[in-house]
Amino acid sequence: MADNPDDLLSYTEIVTLTEQRGTPIKRNSLRALRATGRMPDPDDLTFPDRPRWRRDTIVTWLDTRPGKGARTDLRSNPPVPPSR
Image (cartoon, rainbow, N blue to C red; front, top):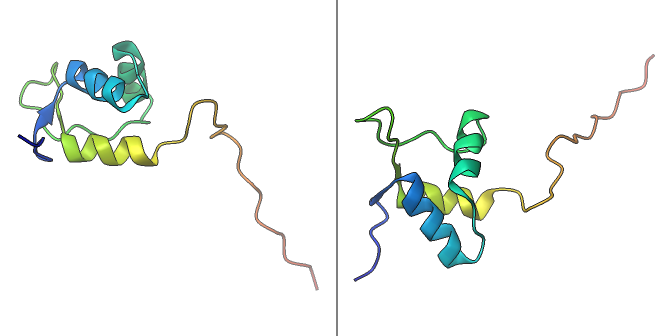
């Protein structure tokens, strides 16, 4: 049976999913990513101490997040228009 994109995943299930995809992320790392706003907001907070995300939300996030070692703190400065 195929995985339903609306399945709700816990931290533990996200760890398993990342391991299956070949890009493992540890549970504590997921918690840190969430605490620093680098992970999508949970789709279900029925129990606030046990957030859950839709499978589709996590797969999309995993597909679009920067790779290991990416410098996300560097931003290019926009060009300054010449003064008249």
